[in-house]
Image (tube, rainbow, N blue to C red):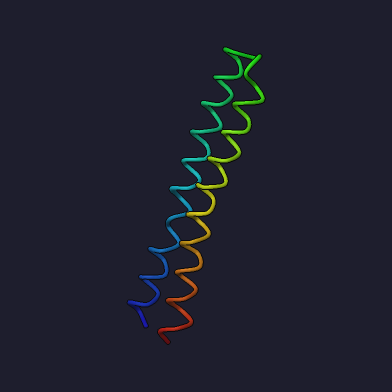
Amino acid sequence: MGLLALGAGIAVLTAIGAGIGIGVATGKAAEAIARQPEAEGKINKTLILGCALAEATAIYGFVIALLIIIMLK
């Protein structure tokens, strides 16, 4: 049971990477908009797509953690 909890905990750590990635991307997007306000629409579209993909990795990690806990009991 201890190794299952460890595996699930490691799988949930993907949320840390997603959080860092979204934070960095948002900061860079804010800098880009400050430098080129006329490109705001294009930058926002790219930012939203990138944030969605980064968040999907966190969700995948959470689902894997749940599968580890539920299926391997």
